[in-house]
Amino acid sequence: MEQQANGFLTQMVQPVLRQLGVESRLFESLLLGAAWTTGFSPWQPSSNRLGIYGLDASWHRRLWDDWLAFQPELASRVRGFAGQHSFLNDPHHELVNNLTYATAVAVCALLRHSEKNPDQLAKTMDAGSLTATWAAATDLKPEDWTLYFQGYERALTLSGRRNLAAA
Image (cartoon, rainbow, N blue to C red; front, side, top):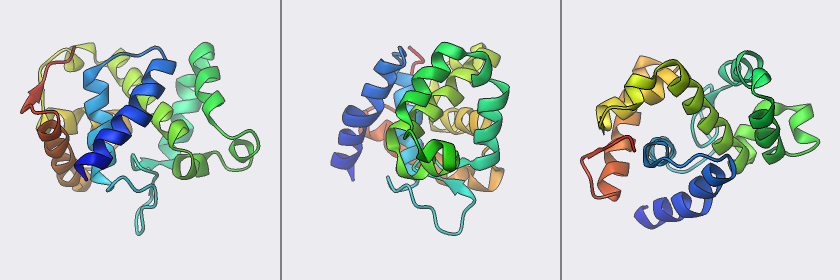
């Protein structure tokens, strides 16, 4: 799975971050850890969370209605990742079937959270604080925290660190 994680980071996460104008090792680790938690699979049986990042449909709608609607340039870039017709028919389905769109939405979750909580993202991040940040950014329920914590532990181990400075 380590090779899959490296490929996912370099072929999916980093290009989307670049296209959105974001450079952050912290965001890379947050996205990689969340994807690791789902086993890099966008299909989550027996869960109401969607896609490789495990995002909730009602949270997805709120992100668009309450934040992206007021960020027109960013919203346009994110919308550019979505399928032309499929997004209009079922936007939440894009979180499952379109990894670039799902990644862009997850980045927006982190951008929105960092806008509201800049001090939290300025600290050194270990697996516990990465989990808390992801949970706060995506409305993750407390019962799911353990799985995400394990994903962040693996992501930090892969990067050769026990914690990550938010640089």
